Image 1: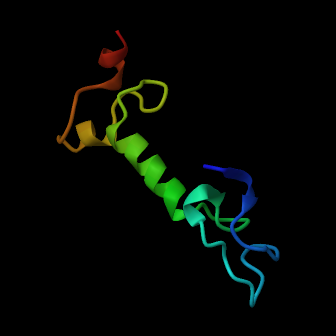
Image 2: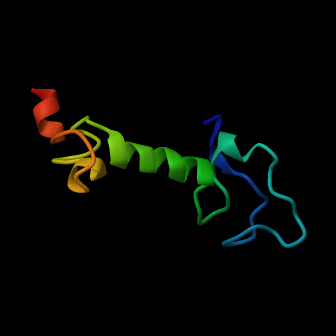
Length: 79
């Protein structure tokens, strides 16, 4: 992500300022407005919790393992 401290739109409290347009490059932003992440960040986080095998990210199991669709516990991968 290129923009980690700024929002994708001009904010007014919680939400975009009425009449303003959101940024065109939303995939480069972590935050859409003052209260919500962008779709790009949600996808990134979802991939991490679903597939990561790093115990510092998913412990003791990732979602794929819990659903019976993937590799074993993250703790075993670190050993």
